[in-house]
Image (cartoon, rainbow, N blue to C red; front, side, top):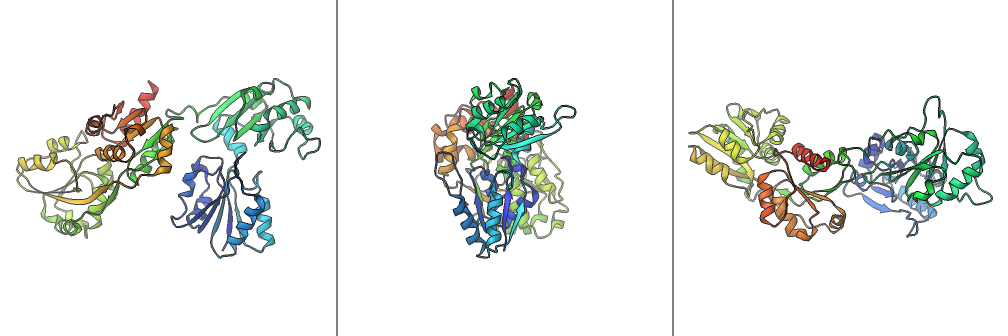
Length: 482
């Protein structure tokens, strides 16, 4: 098999290349450094071994020799090994040393380039590294080497004389010395300068100054430093997104949690996925199987969640059995789940709650099938029965509370917002983590979830106007804008 030296990019997991994602998906072993985004590790199979060799300044570190030996040893086992490195493996990342060690040992390897922070981080700060007519070249320099050394591989005088843009990687700790050295080498003290900390991540911060004053702002690692006329550019877009920098807890079950988390991240938030419910088959699965087999005998099938759609259709042997049956969906998410199975909902109420669906349904007589969660409110079946329908409520799944996650719980202390998308998420979160762990801003998907939260003593600050994820995200945007 092969050892893949994969560039993970500067931080934003969306910047991983398609080839990088492909080899991660087939990995048996992942060896990663501290700058790799944790969510990238989820792209590897659950059973893959994950080995951290992160080098943390002032903390424990794995020597490069030990990393080389580890890659050779694992490469010889016949496993697919992915070495996940921040940025690009061949740009100040010692990927060349690792490749040389593998080559010397006769172990097959492949280089998967990554997007280097030298270009991506300035771009996320709205700083182009080149501009026509003003900055037609750029130089990338390591700041890891001490500029005060008499002898070194970096010729700072030559760097200053080149002109154009100078990008310094790993230079935050030596920022003052680097600036002084460039001024001594002839670069004007008023040359625009910028330091971008934690570039491409939700906690990105851009410091703008001049060559003479940048060190006074005390940039912290990891930081990408830019000197030159382009550093005065402020084409900010990443830090201007509506939820930029907000740390928001998502309590939804998987895979719905990833959908909400993705929407939040696209708007600049740091989404902390902490699912407090999971879905299991119902206690009496045979009952669901029989109901699906007899679907054609009903006048209406009413679906109240995307999960209910998925579980019901798992046991629907032939979609043609719904040919004479009308289908109702409680909201657009459920309707979309039906549409994925080429079924168009005959009825979607204006308000996406059981009460509104009940009002929109015609009166009986006839038979109605409701495949839904094993535990749910009885407003809908009781109301339909009162309207003359013969109602069969069939459990399609159970919602259960997974074990609490200590690692995720540790992130709650720094979170600003928590989102609840059902009464179950409120109840399970409080039962698992307690009211003291609830962040300052509580946001809910609608009035029923809000009522549950308030009954448990929480103050709800944000409530979606419609019972949808899009509406919840819009409500958060509106709250923070105001």
